[in-house]
Amino acid sequence: MDIRVTVWNENRVNEKTRGMYEVYPEGIHGRLREIFEGAGFSVATALLDEPECGLTDATLARTDVLVYWSHLAREEVPDSLAEKIAEAVNRGMGFIPLHSAHMAKPFVRLMGTTCTLSWRESYDRELLWSVCPGHPIAEGIPPVTELLPEEMYGEYFDIPAPEETVFTSWFSGGEVFRSGVCYRRGRGRIFYFQPGHETYPTYYVPEIERILVNAVRWAAPAYREESTRTCRHVEPLVSSREEDGHGRL
Ligand code: ZN
Image (cartoon, rainbow, N blue to C red; front, side):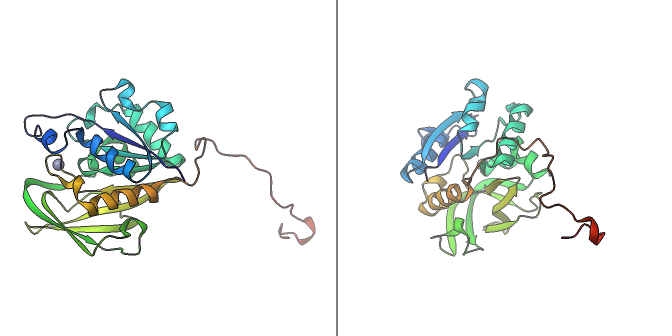
């Protein structure tokens, strides 16, 4: 099956995050594109500064899985676009918010909670534990993957109880975090994945690459609905018989 991936990136830097281009000369979206093209997916990239924030209706319509990286500029995404993304997920599009996209508007909208967490930008060591080894996203991933350095994201992470928790992380400051969690919304699948601070080379770690590729395969829809906003009026499938008095067959 040909999977069409759109990698969306806000692609903004400030004083603190300028080092991002040393780690990812082509931008984070450039590195993610490389990973997904290597897996044989059809990949497009989209950026916040493009017309309609890079996500036109046509782009969303031809996206099987939207991979989404955001941080500084999350409030610049219009509510109307967040709504369109949520609607596309409800119709079947896969959605993979990464790292600081935990508070991206479409993710918060789909979760219905604040999605806040505790954090510390330092030189932490992260141990990423595979806690659901039979899950398709964990396929080929060792029990523990070390990431050094990574930004600390800790509990409490204000998300709804995950339908599946595929990864849980420990950080060298003693914190723990539900770092890879799955949801279904409507017909769509969502996987939030925490590793990926912009100035650390996390997206070059082979296990992380594999998790991302596995996640895209898992989130790709079997089919898409045209619309989820209409309730169908239907005739009975079977006719009730008057003689038994209860409408049973
Ligand atoms: Zn970060």
